[in-house]
Length: 470
Image 1 (cartoon, rainbow, N blue to C red):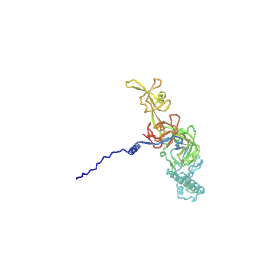
Image 2 (cartoon, rainbow, N blue to C red; image 1 turned 120 degrees about the vertical axis):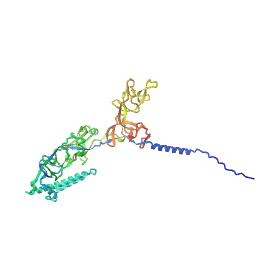
Image 3 (spheres, rainbow, N blue to C red; image 1 turned 90 degrees about the vertical axis):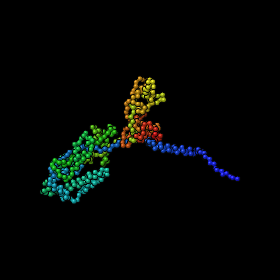
Image 4 (cartoon, rainbow, N blue to C red; image 1 turned 135 degrees about the vertical axis):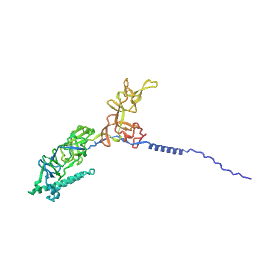
């Protein structure tokens, strides 16, 4: 009896939808969406507005104005100096000699007729020069080290010249002494051994060209050089009253206000003094003259001087400069503003129906500022040429005039909302702004830190750090 072999029958598996798979798939898709949105979304940072203060950026480099007299030599020869620079000399005081033969200069250079040991007074003078030079050294201005070198060399040479001249005078009948001519100061004053061509400068003459130091470099009057009759011997500052002129702007003028004097700190030595205020204006702009009755002797050899104005700090709402933007608005007369049925502010605009007949519509609009009866309205609300109708009147106004406001983007409402600000003072990082009206920024408002990265009415998803807009 035969048997038949049974073949197994395969059944197609039925697909059973699993809730876990659905949830996992939904989460996966959501993650992909979030990652995509993150990569294609602008990321912003918020800033909370607080009350603060701000010092005006008040470091300046100005030009010194003094009463200066140029003194020339009467004889040709080699000049040797005896008076110390930046020290007072009396009328008729010995400042220099002119050695016609050059014998005295050679003696000084060779060390002959000069005592080999300096006096205690000479040593103290050199020590003071070295200490002063050490304190005034600045890594950022290495050229200053050459001035220090020249000053010390000049002091040593002057001490040698004094010693040599004393020895020369003691040798009666010496041929060299008969060819040495004395140079005396014509007036009392402060001796300076340099020139820059600005000795006749007046405060009203200061401009951008005068403040260009490269055009008015200081020329040192070297000790021991050969001079001719009529050449410059030295410069004499004849008055303790002097002034410094610095470039200024309206913020400085506003910060000083009605004050007649302002406190000044000289950066080179931290010395403080009070300068009398005088503002000057020419085709180059605004300048501030600060007049002093002291401290001139310290800076007598310097034409260009660094200083700081110690102005009172401005107080108000403190915002970062990166948040500040400018925005353009339409100007609409205040009397055209009305209130709609939903209590919203807005305007009545003329429209035309399909059949050509005239009609009106209410257009809600936020007011960003009110200046002399003109309201600032977002340019997205109207089109140029729109006709507005004055409430309860037949008067009309055509929208066309524009103006610009300075402000920040406020984030309190969940979207970027331009808010007007009035800047009181600024430095390189922050500004102090006022809050005078309901349209202005208020304390504790949240604003967009980078104003250039957002546009008005952009939606803000969060107001904390890492804020996103869509």
